[in-house]
Image 1 (cartoon, one colour):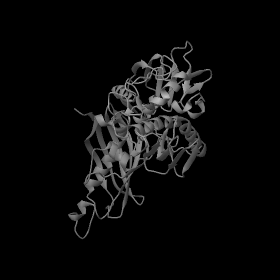
Image 2 (cartoon, one colour; image 1 turned 90 degrees about the vertical axis):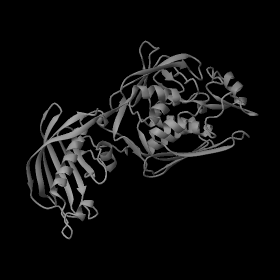
Image 3 (tube, one colour; image 1 turned 45 degrees about the vertical axis):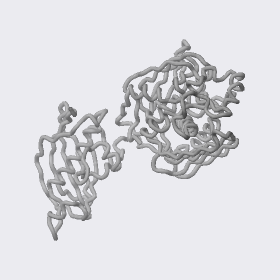
Image 4 (cartoon, rainbow, N blue to C red; image 1 turned 135 degrees about the vertical axis):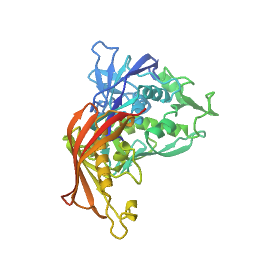
Length: 440
Protein backbone atom coordinates (compact mmCIF):
# COMPACT_ATOMS: atom_id res chain seq x y z
CA UNK A 1 0.00 0.00 0.00
CA UNK A 2 1.15 3.54 -0.67
CA UNK A 3 2.70 5.16 2.38
CA UNK A 4 1.31 8.54 1.24
CA UNK A 5 -2.15 9.49 0.02
CA UNK A 6 -2.77 9.86 -3.70
CA UNK A 7 -5.00 11.77 -6.10
CA UNK A 8 -5.25 12.33 -9.86
CA UNK A 9 -2.68 14.38 -11.76
CA UNK A 10 -5.34 15.94 -14.00
CA UNK A 11 -9.06 15.78 -14.66
CA UNK A 12 -10.61 13.32 -17.11
CA UNK A 13 -14.16 12.63 -18.28
CA UNK A 14 -16.26 9.75 -19.55
CA UNK A 15 -19.72 9.88 -21.17
CA UNK A 16 -22.28 7.12 -21.50
CA UNK A 17 -25.67 5.79 -20.43
CA UNK A 18 -26.57 4.84 -16.85
CA UNK A 19 -27.22 1.12 -16.31
CA UNK A 20 -30.39 1.24 -14.22
CA UNK A 21 -31.96 4.65 -14.85
CA UNK A 22 -30.91 4.79 -18.51
CA UNK A 23 -29.98 8.49 -18.58
CA UNK A 24 -27.03 9.77 -20.59
CA UNK A 25 -24.49 11.39 -18.31
CA UNK A 26 -20.91 12.58 -18.14
CA UNK A 27 -18.66 11.84 -15.23
CA UNK A 28 -15.56 13.95 -14.61
CA UNK A 29 -12.84 12.85 -12.21
CA UNK A 30 -10.84 15.73 -10.71
CA UNK A 31 -7.81 15.94 -8.41
CA UNK A 32 -8.56 16.58 -4.73
CA UNK A 33 -6.50 17.60 -1.68
CA UNK A 34 -5.36 15.11 0.95
CA UNK A 35 -8.05 13.79 3.33
CA UNK A 36 -10.85 14.65 0.87
CA UNK A 37 -11.71 11.03 0.11
CA UNK A 38 -14.31 10.64 -2.64
CA UNK A 39 -16.95 13.33 -3.13
CA UNK A 40 -19.67 13.33 -5.80
CA UNK A 41 -20.86 16.67 -7.18
CA UNK A 42 -24.21 16.85 -9.02
CA UNK A 43 -23.51 19.34 -11.83
CA UNK A 44 -27.05 18.95 -13.22
CA UNK A 45 -28.35 20.84 -10.19
CA UNK A 46 -27.82 24.59 -9.99
CA UNK A 47 -26.59 24.46 -6.39
CA UNK A 48 -24.03 21.77 -7.34
CA UNK A 49 -24.75 19.71 -4.18
CA UNK A 50 -21.99 17.45 -2.87
CA UNK A 51 -22.41 13.89 -1.66
CA UNK A 52 -19.58 12.51 0.47
CA UNK A 53 -18.75 8.83 0.10
CA UNK A 54 -19.12 7.15 3.48
CA UNK A 55 -21.48 4.51 4.93
CA UNK A 56 -23.71 7.03 6.68
CA UNK A 57 -24.77 8.40 3.29
CA UNK A 58 -25.93 5.06 1.88
CA UNK A 59 -29.63 5.26 1.03
CA UNK A 60 -32.00 2.32 1.37
CA UNK A 61 -33.63 1.95 -2.04
CA UNK A 62 -35.72 -0.70 -3.70
CA UNK A 63 -33.62 -3.53 -5.07
CA UNK A 64 -30.64 -2.44 -2.96
CA UNK A 65 -29.07 -5.82 -3.75
CA UNK A 66 -28.62 -4.60 -7.36
CA UNK A 67 -26.90 -1.26 -6.70
CA UNK A 68 -25.44 1.08 -4.09
CA UNK A 69 -27.04 4.52 -3.75
CA UNK A 70 -25.65 7.50 -1.85
CA UNK A 71 -27.54 10.58 -0.71
CA UNK A 72 -26.92 13.73 1.25
CA UNK A 73 -29.63 16.22 2.17
CA UNK A 74 -32.17 15.98 -0.69
CA UNK A 75 -29.88 14.70 -3.44
CA UNK A 76 -28.84 11.22 -4.48
CA UNK A 77 -26.48 9.46 -6.84
CA UNK A 78 -27.28 5.89 -7.82
CA UNK A 79 -25.22 2.85 -8.85
CA UNK A 80 -21.90 4.20 -7.59
CA UNK A 81 -20.19 0.87 -6.99
CA UNK A 82 -18.36 0.62 -10.33
CA UNK A 83 -16.98 4.16 -10.12
CA UNK A 84 -15.75 3.58 -6.58
CA UNK A 85 -14.31 0.18 -7.43
CA UNK A 86 -12.18 1.69 -10.21
CA UNK A 87 -10.83 4.42 -7.93
CA UNK A 88 -10.20 2.10 -5.00
CA UNK A 89 -8.67 -0.62 -7.15
CA UNK A 90 -6.24 1.86 -8.70
CA UNK A 91 -5.25 3.04 -5.19
CA UNK A 92 -6.49 6.59 -5.77
CA UNK A 93 -7.42 7.93 -2.33
CA UNK A 94 -8.87 11.37 -3.11
CA UNK A 95 -11.06 12.54 -5.98
CA UNK A 96 -13.84 14.97 -6.80
CA UNK A 97 -16.38 13.15 -8.98
CA UNK A 98 -18.60 15.50 -10.96
CA UNK A 99 -21.65 13.90 -12.57
CA UNK A 100 -24.22 15.45 -14.90
CA UNK A 101 -27.07 13.18 -13.78
CA UNK A 102 -28.13 11.15 -10.77
CA UNK A 103 -26.40 8.00 -12.06
CA UNK A 104 -22.89 7.55 -13.49
CA UNK A 105 -22.54 6.30 -17.05
CA UNK A 106 -22.10 2.54 -17.27
CA UNK A 107 -18.93 1.59 -19.19
CA UNK A 108 -19.91 0.26 -22.62
CA UNK A 109 -18.92 -3.35 -21.90
CA UNK A 110 -20.35 -3.68 -18.38
CA UNK A 111 -16.97 -3.90 -16.67
CA UNK A 112 -14.89 -1.04 -15.24
CA UNK A 113 -12.13 -1.41 -17.80
CA UNK A 114 -13.14 1.86 -19.50
CA UNK A 115 -13.01 3.73 -16.18
CA UNK A 116 -9.59 2.24 -15.49
CA UNK A 117 -8.28 3.37 -18.88
CA UNK A 118 -9.58 6.90 -18.37
CA UNK A 119 -8.16 7.17 -14.85
CA UNK A 120 -4.79 5.78 -15.92
CA UNK A 121 -4.72 8.41 -18.66
CA UNK A 122 -5.09 11.07 -15.94
CA UNK A 123 -2.23 9.60 -13.93
CA UNK A 124 -1.79 9.28 -10.18
CA UNK A 125 -0.09 11.92 -8.05
CA UNK A 126 1.44 11.13 -4.66
CA UNK A 127 0.58 13.64 -1.95
CA UNK A 128 3.88 13.74 -0.10
CA UNK A 129 3.66 14.84 3.50
CA UNK A 130 0.20 13.30 3.90
CA UNK A 131 0.52 9.73 5.22
CA UNK A 132 -2.04 7.15 4.22
CA UNK A 133 -4.78 6.21 6.66
CA UNK A 134 -5.58 2.51 6.96
CA UNK A 135 -8.09 0.29 8.74
CA UNK A 136 -5.62 -2.32 9.98
CA UNK A 137 -7.56 -5.41 11.00
CA UNK A 138 -6.14 -6.82 14.23
CA UNK A 139 -9.18 -8.82 15.36
CA UNK A 140 -11.72 -10.60 13.13
CA UNK A 141 -15.03 -8.95 12.27
CA UNK A 142 -17.91 -11.08 10.96
CA UNK A 143 -21.43 -10.52 9.68
CA UNK A 144 -24.32 -12.82 8.74
CA UNK A 145 -26.95 -10.95 6.73
CA UNK A 146 -29.92 -12.46 4.85
CA UNK A 147 -28.04 -15.59 3.80
CA UNK A 148 -24.74 -13.82 3.10
CA UNK A 149 -21.66 -14.08 5.27
CA UNK A 150 -18.63 -11.81 5.43
CA UNK A 151 -15.55 -11.96 7.63
CA UNK A 152 -12.33 -9.97 7.71
CA UNK A 153 -9.22 -11.28 9.49
CA UNK A 154 -5.71 -9.86 9.97
CA UNK A 155 -3.52 -9.94 6.88
CA UNK A 156 -0.49 -8.08 5.53
CA UNK A 157 -2.07 -6.32 2.56
CA UNK A 158 -5.55 -6.76 1.10
CA UNK A 159 -6.88 -10.14 0.04
CA UNK A 160 -10.41 -11.16 -0.97
CA UNK A 161 -11.78 -14.69 -1.06
CA UNK A 162 -15.30 -14.90 -2.50
CA UNK A 163 -17.73 -17.79 -2.96
CA UNK A 164 -20.60 -17.34 -5.42
CA UNK A 165 -23.38 -19.94 -5.24
CA UNK A 166 -26.34 -19.83 -7.65
CA UNK A 167 -29.00 -22.50 -8.06
CA UNK A 168 -28.51 -22.41 -11.81
CA UNK A 169 -26.94 -25.17 -13.95
CA UNK A 170 -24.75 -22.71 -15.88
CA UNK A 171 -23.45 -20.87 -12.81
CA UNK A 172 -23.40 -23.15 -9.79
CA UNK A 173 -20.58 -22.47 -7.33
CA UNK A 174 -17.63 -20.27 -8.24
CA UNK A 175 -14.73 -19.37 -5.96
CA UNK A 176 -11.80 -17.00 -6.20
CA UNK A 177 -9.10 -15.94 -3.73
CA UNK A 178 -6.88 -13.09 -4.82
CA UNK A 179 -4.36 -10.65 -3.40
CA UNK A 180 -5.75 -7.25 -4.36
CA UNK A 181 -3.07 -4.96 -5.71
CA UNK A 182 -3.24 -2.27 -8.35
CA UNK A 183 -1.88 -4.73 -10.91
CA UNK A 184 -4.17 -7.63 -10.00
CA UNK A 185 -7.18 -5.32 -10.03
CA UNK A 186 -6.36 -4.03 -13.52
CA UNK A 187 -5.71 -7.48 -14.98
CA UNK A 188 -7.92 -9.86 -13.00
CA UNK A 189 -10.92 -7.89 -11.72
CA UNK A 190 -11.55 -4.75 -13.81
CA UNK A 191 -12.45 -6.66 -17.04
CA UNK A 192 -15.17 -8.77 -15.34
CA UNK A 193 -18.63 -7.71 -16.56
CA UNK A 194 -21.84 -7.26 -14.61
CA UNK A 195 -24.35 -10.09 -15.02
CA UNK A 196 -27.93 -11.16 -14.41
CA UNK A 197 -30.24 -14.08 -15.06
CA UNK A 198 -32.53 -13.82 -18.06
CA UNK A 199 -35.48 -14.75 -15.84
CA UNK A 200 -34.78 -11.61 -13.76
CA UNK A 201 -34.64 -9.19 -16.70
CA UNK A 202 -38.40 -8.64 -17.02
CA UNK A 203 -38.80 -8.34 -13.23
CA UNK A 204 -36.11 -5.66 -13.07
CA UNK A 205 -37.58 -3.80 -16.03
CA UNK A 206 -41.01 -3.75 -14.37
CA UNK A 207 -39.35 -2.13 -11.34
CA UNK A 208 -37.89 0.62 -13.51
CA UNK A 209 -34.34 -0.76 -13.45
CA UNK A 210 -31.75 -1.76 -16.09
CA UNK A 211 -33.17 0.79 -18.54
CA UNK A 212 -29.67 1.13 -19.95
CA UNK A 213 -28.91 -2.59 -19.87
CA UNK A 214 -28.13 -4.48 -23.10
CA UNK A 215 -26.33 -7.62 -24.16
CA UNK A 216 -23.39 -5.32 -24.84
CA UNK A 217 -22.94 -4.09 -21.27
CA UNK A 218 -24.03 -7.12 -19.23
CA UNK A 219 -23.63 -10.87 -19.28
CA UNK A 220 -27.09 -12.48 -19.39
CA UNK A 221 -27.45 -16.13 -18.35
CA UNK A 222 -30.38 -18.05 -19.81
CA UNK A 223 -31.55 -21.65 -19.64
CA UNK A 224 -28.98 -22.63 -22.27
CA UNK A 225 -26.09 -20.62 -20.85
CA UNK A 226 -24.59 -17.28 -21.82
CA UNK A 227 -26.86 -15.42 -24.25
CA UNK A 228 -24.27 -12.84 -25.36
CA UNK A 229 -22.46 -13.16 -28.66
CA UNK A 230 -19.13 -12.64 -26.90
CA UNK A 231 -17.87 -15.48 -24.67
CA UNK A 232 -16.97 -15.14 -21.01
CA UNK A 233 -13.67 -13.34 -20.43
CA UNK A 234 -12.80 -15.72 -17.59
CA UNK A 235 -14.31 -19.12 -16.75
CA UNK A 236 -15.17 -17.57 -13.36
CA UNK A 237 -16.03 -14.10 -14.65
CA UNK A 238 -19.18 -13.88 -12.54
CA UNK A 239 -17.47 -14.30 -9.17
CA UNK A 240 -14.77 -11.87 -10.29
CA UNK A 241 -17.45 -9.26 -10.86
CA UNK A 242 -18.79 -9.91 -7.37
CA UNK A 243 -15.29 -9.11 -6.08
CA UNK A 244 -15.37 -5.94 -8.20
CA UNK A 245 -18.65 -4.90 -6.58
CA UNK A 246 -17.32 -5.73 -3.10
CA UNK A 247 -14.25 -3.54 -3.68
CA UNK A 248 -16.54 -0.69 -4.73
CA UNK A 249 -18.59 -1.06 -1.57
CA UNK A 250 -15.46 -1.28 0.59
CA UNK A 251 -14.52 2.14 -0.81
CA UNK A 252 -17.31 3.47 1.43
CA UNK A 253 -14.78 3.16 4.27
CA UNK A 254 -13.13 6.24 2.80
CA UNK A 255 -9.66 4.87 3.51
CA UNK A 256 -7.63 1.72 2.80
CA UNK A 257 -8.41 -1.64 4.39
CA UNK A 258 -5.64 -4.01 5.47
CA UNK A 259 -7.00 -7.49 6.00
CA UNK A 260 -8.31 -10.67 4.36
CA UNK A 261 -12.00 -10.43 3.46
CA UNK A 262 -13.81 -13.77 3.15
CA UNK A 263 -17.25 -13.45 1.59
CA UNK A 264 -19.99 -15.89 0.55
CA UNK A 265 -23.18 -15.04 -1.32
CA UNK A 266 -22.86 -11.35 -0.51
CA UNK A 267 -24.32 -8.44 -2.47
CA UNK A 268 -24.52 -4.69 -2.07
CA UNK A 269 -26.89 -4.71 0.90
CA UNK A 270 -24.75 -7.11 2.94
CA UNK A 271 -21.53 -5.42 1.82
CA UNK A 272 -22.77 -2.08 3.13
CA UNK A 273 -23.80 -3.58 6.46
CA UNK A 274 -20.38 -5.20 6.73
CA UNK A 275 -18.57 -1.93 6.08
CA UNK A 276 -20.69 -0.25 8.74
CA UNK A 277 -19.79 -2.96 11.23
CA UNK A 278 -16.06 -2.61 10.51
CA UNK A 279 -16.30 1.14 11.09
CA UNK A 280 -18.18 0.61 14.35
CA UNK A 281 -15.77 -2.02 15.69
CA UNK A 282 -12.67 -0.07 14.69
CA UNK A 283 -13.92 3.41 15.56
CA UNK A 284 -10.96 5.44 16.76
CA UNK A 285 -8.47 2.75 15.74
CA UNK A 286 -7.51 4.00 12.29
CA UNK A 287 -3.80 3.56 11.76
CA UNK A 288 -2.11 6.71 10.57
CA UNK A 289 0.98 8.72 11.28
CA UNK A 290 0.74 11.28 14.06
CA UNK A 291 -0.13 14.86 13.22
CA UNK A 292 3.52 15.84 13.69
CA UNK A 293 5.09 14.74 10.42
CA UNK A 294 8.46 14.50 12.17
CA UNK A 295 7.21 11.24 13.64
CA UNK A 296 6.58 9.49 10.33
CA UNK A 297 8.31 6.12 10.07
CA UNK A 298 9.23 4.09 6.98
CA UNK A 299 10.03 0.40 6.97
CA UNK A 300 12.39 -1.32 4.53
CA UNK A 301 9.68 -1.60 1.86
CA UNK A 302 9.16 2.16 1.96
CA UNK A 303 12.93 2.72 1.79
CA UNK A 304 13.19 0.44 -1.26
CA UNK A 305 10.36 2.33 -2.94
CA UNK A 306 12.58 5.42 -2.97
CA UNK A 307 16.20 4.32 -3.04
CA UNK A 308 17.44 2.59 -6.23
CA UNK A 309 20.13 0.68 -4.29
CA UNK A 310 19.89 -3.08 -3.79
CA UNK A 311 21.96 -5.84 -2.20
CA UNK A 312 24.74 -5.58 -1.29
CA UNK A 313 24.65 -1.77 -1.44
CA UNK A 314 21.38 -0.86 0.27
CA UNK A 315 22.60 0.43 3.63
CA UNK A 316 19.48 1.90 5.29
CA UNK A 317 17.04 -0.40 7.10
CA UNK A 318 14.45 2.00 8.50
CA UNK A 319 13.52 5.67 8.80
CA UNK A 320 12.58 6.57 12.36
CA UNK A 321 11.44 10.13 11.74
CA UNK A 322 11.52 12.79 9.07
CA UNK A 323 10.71 16.48 8.92
CA UNK A 324 10.16 17.38 5.25
CA UNK A 325 13.09 19.45 3.93
CA UNK A 326 14.52 19.80 7.46
CA UNK A 327 15.91 16.59 8.93
CA UNK A 328 15.83 12.80 8.92
CA UNK A 329 16.75 10.02 11.36
CA UNK A 330 17.44 6.52 10.00
CA UNK A 331 19.12 3.32 11.15
CA UNK A 332 21.36 0.59 9.76
CA UNK A 333 21.69 -2.74 11.58
CA UNK A 334 25.20 -4.12 11.10
CA UNK A 335 25.55 -7.93 11.17
CA UNK A 336 28.49 -10.28 10.74
CA UNK A 337 26.81 -11.43 7.51
CA UNK A 338 27.69 -8.17 5.75
CA UNK A 339 29.78 -9.13 2.67
CA UNK A 340 32.45 -6.51 3.32
CA UNK A 341 33.54 -8.18 6.59
CA UNK A 342 35.13 -11.00 4.58
CA UNK A 343 37.96 -8.69 3.59
CA UNK A 344 37.77 -5.82 6.13
CA UNK A 345 39.34 -7.29 8.15
CA UNK A 346 39.51 -11.10 8.58
CA UNK A 347 39.71 -11.78 12.28
CA UNK A 348 39.03 -8.14 13.23
CA UNK A 349 35.87 -7.12 11.33
CA UNK A 350 35.32 -3.36 11.06
CA UNK A 351 32.77 -1.64 8.79
CA UNK A 352 34.67 0.48 6.24
CA UNK A 353 34.37 4.17 7.03
CA UNK A 354 33.51 4.95 3.41
CA UNK A 355 30.47 2.66 3.68
CA UNK A 356 29.33 4.44 6.83
CA UNK A 357 29.53 7.67 4.83
CA UNK A 358 27.64 5.97 1.97
CA UNK A 359 24.89 4.85 4.35
CA UNK A 360 24.69 8.40 5.73
CA UNK A 361 24.40 9.70 2.17
CA UNK A 362 21.57 7.24 1.42
CA UNK A 363 19.68 8.51 4.47
CA UNK A 364 20.17 12.06 3.20
CA UNK A 365 18.99 10.99 -0.23
CA UNK A 366 15.73 9.76 1.27
CA UNK A 367 15.10 13.26 2.63
CA UNK A 368 15.65 14.70 -0.86
CA UNK A 369 13.37 12.15 -2.51
CA UNK A 370 10.68 12.99 0.05
CA UNK A 371 10.69 16.61 -1.17
CA UNK A 372 9.48 15.88 -4.72
CA UNK A 373 6.08 14.73 -5.97
CA UNK A 374 7.29 11.91 -8.23
CA UNK A 375 10.51 10.42 -6.77
CA UNK A 376 10.75 7.87 -9.57
CA UNK A 377 11.63 10.66 -12.02
CA UNK A 378 14.70 11.76 -10.05
CA UNK A 379 18.20 10.71 -9.05
CA UNK A 380 20.18 11.99 -6.07
CA UNK A 381 23.79 12.72 -6.98
CA UNK A 382 26.39 13.72 -4.38
CA UNK A 383 28.79 16.50 -5.24
CA UNK A 384 30.88 16.86 -2.12
CA UNK A 385 31.83 15.44 1.29
CA UNK A 386 33.48 17.83 3.76
CA UNK A 387 34.59 17.94 7.39
CA UNK A 388 34.68 14.14 7.70
CA UNK A 389 35.73 12.77 11.07
CA UNK A 390 35.87 9.12 12.11
CA UNK A 391 35.44 8.92 15.88
CA UNK A 392 34.62 5.30 16.66
CA UNK A 393 34.82 2.00 14.70
CA UNK A 394 31.56 0.31 13.70
CA UNK A 395 31.53 -3.41 14.51
CA UNK A 396 29.25 -6.40 13.83
CA UNK A 397 26.20 -6.21 16.11
CA UNK A 398 26.13 -2.41 16.16
CA UNK A 399 23.11 -0.35 15.18
CA UNK A 400 24.04 2.91 13.48
CA UNK A 401 21.71 5.86 13.96
CA UNK A 402 22.05 8.47 11.22
CA UNK A 403 20.91 12.00 12.05
CA UNK A 404 21.00 14.53 9.21
CA UNK A 405 19.79 18.11 9.10
CA UNK A 406 19.56 20.54 6.23
CA UNK A 407 22.10 23.37 6.40
CA UNK A 408 21.22 25.17 3.18
CA UNK A 409 19.32 24.73 -0.05
CA UNK A 410 19.75 26.50 -3.36
CA UNK A 411 17.42 25.28 -6.08
CA UNK A 412 17.94 21.53 -6.19
CA UNK A 413 21.32 21.68 -4.45
CA UNK A 414 21.20 20.61 -0.79
CA UNK A 415 23.85 20.78 1.91
CA UNK A 416 23.39 18.58 5.00
CA UNK A 417 25.21 17.98 8.24
CA UNK A 418 25.25 14.33 9.26
CA UNK A 419 26.17 12.35 12.35
CA UNK A 420 26.36 8.56 12.69
CA UNK A 421 25.96 7.34 16.27
CA UNK A 422 26.47 3.95 17.89
CA UNK A 423 25.18 3.62 21.46
CA UNK A 424 24.79 7.43 21.62
CA UNK A 425 28.49 7.90 20.80
CA UNK A 426 29.50 9.67 17.59
CA UNK A 427 31.11 7.21 15.19
CA UNK A 428 31.31 9.41 12.07
CA UNK A 429 30.39 12.98 11.22
CA UNK A 430 30.44 14.81 7.89
CA UNK A 431 28.88 17.51 5.74
CA UNK A 432 27.33 16.28 2.49
CA UNK A 433 26.36 18.19 -0.64
CA UNK A 434 23.86 16.61 -3.04
CA UNK A 435 21.46 17.55 -5.79
CA UNK A 436 18.33 16.21 -7.43
CA UNK A 437 18.76 15.42 -11.12
CA UNK A 438 15.83 14.47 -13.35
CA UNK A 439 16.26 11.15 -15.12
CA UNK A 440 16.67 11.30 -18.88
